[in-house]
Every structure is written in C-alpha cells, then in structure tokens.
Image 1 (cartoon, helix red, strand yellow):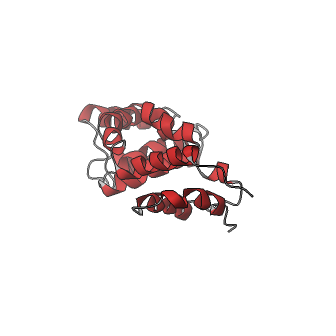
Image 2 (cartoon, helix red, strand yellow; image 1 turned 90 degrees about the vertical axis):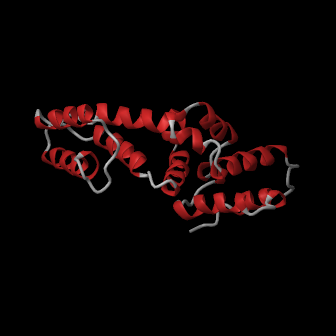
Image 3 (cartoon, helix red, strand yellow; image 1 turned 60 degrees about the vertical axis):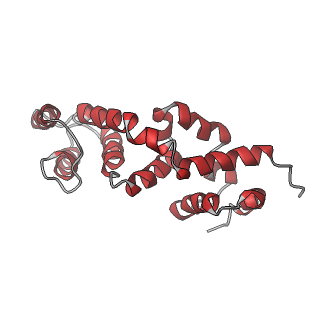
Length: 186
C-alpha cells in the first residue's frame, strides 16, 4: 500500500493534541487500502460539513457511511446500516434472476425475519409487507418499505447522536484545522 496519507498527517500533526483526531484518521486508514491521491482517500471539508445537514449525504458517501457504521458498532446497532446497504446493493441486481431471488431470501433471513441473527427493528406490518413482496416475486423494490423504515429510524435517532459523537466532531475539527492551517512548503 502506498502511504498516501503522509502529506495529510503532516498538515494535521500540529492539531493532534488529544489523540482522538488520530484515532478517527486511523479508522479511515485501516478501512481503506487506497493507492491514489489524498483527496480521493479523505472526505473534503464541504463533504464532512454536509453530513451535518443531510443524513442522505452521509449515507451516500463511502467514508461517511463507514464512519457512521463505526459509530453504530459502538451502540450495538450496526445491523441497521448493514441492512440499508444490503438493500442498496439489492436494488442494483437484475430482476427475475435466480441469484436475485436467492439474495432476497438471504437478506430476509439475516435481517427481516423474526429472531434473525441481525434482526432490524421493524413493526409487524412492515415485516409482513416485506414478506409478501418477496413471495410475489423478488423485484428491486422488495425491501423498499423496510429500508425506508430503518432509514427513518436511523435519521431520527442514531444520526443525531452521531453528530454529537467524538468520531464526527474530531473529523470536523480536523477538516476545520486543515483549512485554517498555514500552507506547507514543498
């Protein structure tokens, strides 16, 4: 792996006093083996600040979603974002294919079925509607209702706590400090 973060660490070094910023950066470093420019590895200031305003932009950003998942792991509720991501991937599958039907059953068994290993918090009506959608032919929208319910649950609950958590706040501090730091001469 090419160490693409070295320039980034050189900029951040003066601002790492408590060690928590370095933990957040280490999280990115450990999760992504990327051999490209720093800008493609690390979210921009605008992206990080946009996550504060839009839960959707957080979920749709690769690194934002990873950071949010790490937060949910601490809360023992990462099954919610895992389910949401599985649904996003499922939507991309071709309808009518054997693999699509098989994947739908796997997702249902893993997340939606009562007493599933990673059961998400769905009301009985949504669970029944999802099961009915599967039985009527696994289409790209089979999990749409359940996914929407879980997204709403995360948006009104976990997301608000995430914005106050040190994982996100340290990242905000880091991008704010980079913008305000003097330019490093090459």
